[in-house]
Length: 253
Image 1 (spheres, one colour):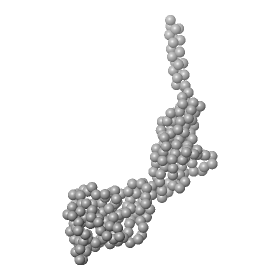
Image 2: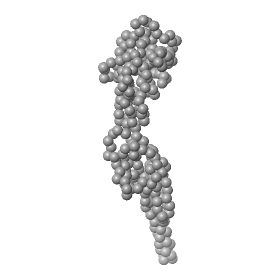
Image 3: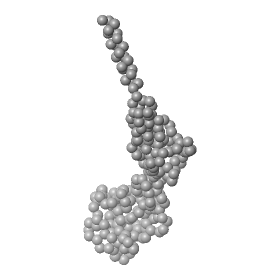
Image 4: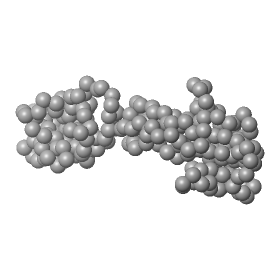
């Protein structure tokens, strides 16, 4: 009887060990995800991550834009485990889609697609901005017009030569969607040059636009807008009425 129990225990141990070492097809533990890198920032390398379980241990390959990467012919692509390491990444060469493949004798699996994109923001055009004229007590909108870019932007404005940003209050509001500056009930102290300052955090770069002069109309003539609207520059140097909706905050864009 004792011998029988020993045989049962031995068989259980054999089955347990055999199960632990049984061949298994690859299964992703980590798949690559989208990456946005600054286009103008010197960076030694960039890494797209990939890891898979399986027995035997999987081997890895990568595709760029649906084409297999030839690691033997490329100096700037290399494998580190399952990760793809890109040396000296450049937008014109490396932007695109990437997929990881994990292979062992039981099969091959293909990862989700990851996009590698490069954030940038160009400089503003240097042409002079048109002067915006307004009567005291009326509202006005100053347009930012950000230059071509990729990546999220944040906006601020400076006044005359002050390095400090225009502070938002009950009369001033900066839209973080368009960058436009809204001023309600213009006062003589508001007259001067306003400059839009745009930051692309992902690109790690900020640019400054040309100044927009704001002047008070000496003749007192202005576009007649309803009391809940404000005037601003339109096409061809004309003016437009804009809805005035804020009271501390604004829904203007």
